[in-house]
Amino acid sequence: MAIATCLSSPSFSPLHKSISIPKISTTFPLHLRISSFTTTTTTTTTLRYHQPSPFLTFSALPGGNGGDINNSDGGGGNDDNGKGNGGGGGGEDAGDKNRKEAMVVLAEAGRSMESLPKDLAAAIQSGRIPGSVIERFLGLEKSGFMRWLMQFGGFKERLLADDLFLAKVAMECGVGIFTKTAAEYERRREKFFKELEIVFADVVMAIIADFMLVYLPAPTVSLRPPLAVNAGALSKFFYSCPDNAFQIALPGTSYSLLQRLGAVMRNGAKLFAVGTTSSLVGTAVTNALINARKAVDKSSGAEVENVPILSTSVAYGVYMAVSSNLRYQVLAGVIEQRILEPLLHQHKLMLSAICFAVRTGNTFLGSLLWVDYARLVGIQKAHEGENTALE
Image (cartoon, rainbow, N blue to C red; front, side, top):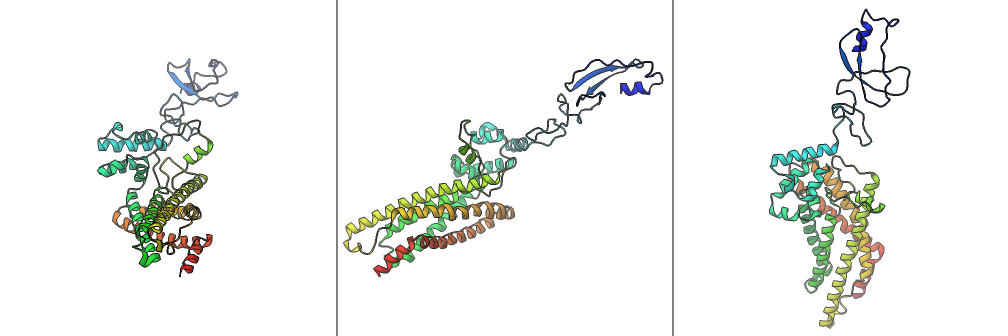
């Protein structure tokens, strides 16, 4: 360094000669050209000014260690978003890493951003999804049916999070049809075929409810566009909540405990609406069929009674919002996504078989809990009283 050279030179004496340092600004970084009268070498030195002091600190900083804002290789400190100010010393941002991974996958597949759906391309640009999600999308897109189904945003978000989502829907609805039909036959016995239209209405209602119980609490890869700037605080809060309270967050994303509780409340409200509506429609159709039967066959008037519409519908909505909501959130987010899939992700057939067994057990448990709940709120007792009176 120029100063060090001056100090070590035999001809230098601080008592006789001195270096004239011009007045400098306190803004940084500063570049000073200091020339020694004993040498012909000129050195460029970077001055970092920390605070007013009678002593000036000079630091010759090679690129990579400095944090000089003019040096792209500097390893400066972190900003408020956790991103390094300098490129060489700081860690890579999760969004940048996701974007690079996705672009690599697209390049290997020979695809461009323009060939992707707009919401998926926007998510890649913003760094919200990693390369593994793009790999799953490209794999699903090979099937014509899956390509058509992914035109619907809700299905696309769920299929990108779980490629067995449709299989689980089929499992749930298949088990629901079987168990509901078996329950109807057990309750009606010899009247089963005489009241087949009522059985059909009940089974259809159960299928709709089963589908929504799989669809709503399923983990998702969020591709939703940002909310409007003037959106309310409540809308912004629920927008930031995951679809499943226990789902694994993607790299670069995290959910607080409050957001996960918000997912339980939001899905509970949706399932209450679904349960109440489906039960309302199903019960109304059942009563309409009963009344039509009574009009045609007068002798059947004493055999079949109308089902209470409002009380049954509200009770079923509450049951789905609480019991079904919590059970299916845990099933999809904990048992399947966090336990079974990491263990058996290379064995899809075995994973599907175990998921089928677990979901069948969950459906059976739900049936037992519904009977206890119906008796607790008085619905089952009312029907038992009616049946006893008829006998």
